[in-house]
Image (cartoon, rainbow, N blue to C red; front, top):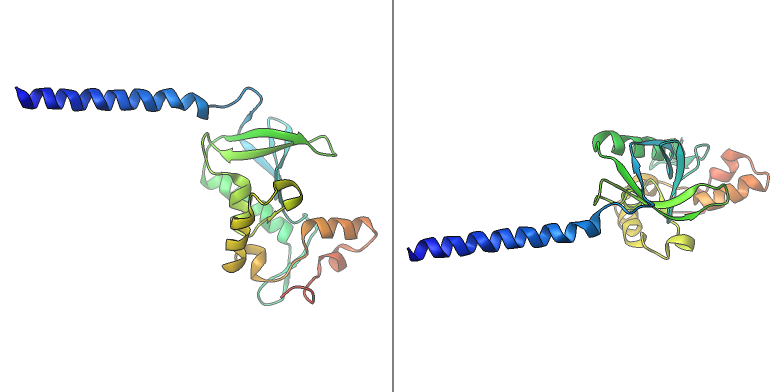
Length: 190
């Protein structure tokens, strides 16, 4: 009999623990202003859900016309590589993307932190940690700094060779520079 009471108490404790865990779950649910759905890739730091363009907050990926140098100093389309890596992530992990709006950018796009599922891995963190985007401290206040340091130390993605920061590349092109000339920073870095 005594053993039955112990088992019964353990069972009640498990049920209580499960109920407590479930009561916490609403805090993890989607907020009313979140955007949720299957995402398509526009470029390395912009996605689209239900026809709405979303710029990933706190990171900056190379532009589609931007070139980087690999570890053999050969030029490659790092902007396209970043977009392809993001598309591969969505293909490999088939979950809806959940984006929590933070702001609007100068082009009217929603700027948001996005994850695969709720809760799920932060897509911006994944891009930076794999060397496909950079922490953009102007906006992120260093949120992805550790992920970037890890990518650099391991020579992942762009960190395997040389590149121009995407914000510097855009400024150069805007000032009239040619895409190839604005992309090449091989003498500046490493």
